[in-house]
Image (tube, rainbow, N blue to C red; front, side, top):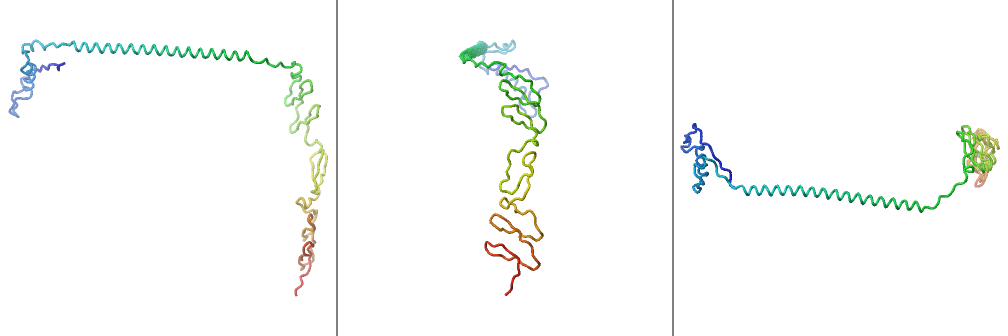
Length: 260
C-alpha cells in the first residue's frame, strides 16, 4: 500500500520565497512545491490539481480488509483452541480423579478381605482370675497371690523391698537387715559386729594384703622383711651405731663399724 498523501499547506505570507542567507528558494517553499510534484505523480500521474482540491484519491482497501479478516479468524481459532485445551484438561483431571477413586476402592476392598481372613482372636481368661482384686495404694507394689493381684502398703523413704519367697514381700530398712555371711579373708581384719547393721572392720592389715602386720611402733623403729610374707620391727639402739646388713636372707642389725 502506498504511503499516505502529504498535502502541505502553502507557507505563511511572512515566509520569504528567496532565502536572503543563501540566495536560493527557501526550505518551506521548496517543500511545498516538492509535495505538489509528488502529489501529481512526479509528472507521470493523471491526477490534476483540481482533483487534489476536491480530495485525495481513494485507494482499494480490499487487501487490508482481507488481512484484518484473516487476523480476526486466527484470533478466533486461537480462542477456540484454548477453549478446547481447557476442556481437555478438565477431562484429563476427571479421568485422573476417577482412576484414583477406583484405586482407593480396590485398596479398601483388599484391606477388608485381609481383615475377613484374619485368624480368630485368642480368648482371655475369666475376669475374676486376671482382674485386680485389690485397690492400689500410692507407693505400693503389685504382687501375685496365686489367684489374684494384691498390693503392698507404701514403704518409707530409703527402704527396699524384701522377698518372702511365696509370701508377701515387705519393705525393709537396710540397717535392720542381718548380714548372713562375711569374710575378711587373709587380711587379718575381723568384723566388730558380724551380723547386724553396718559392718565395722577391726584388726591389723597383714603385709600380704598391703599392710604391715604391726599394730604399734616405738620411736626409731625400722621395718624390714623378716620373711617373704611378713614385716618385722628393728628397734632403735644407742647413738653412734650403724645399720649393718646381715647378708642375703639374714636380718639387718645395728653395730659399730670397725676401721682397719
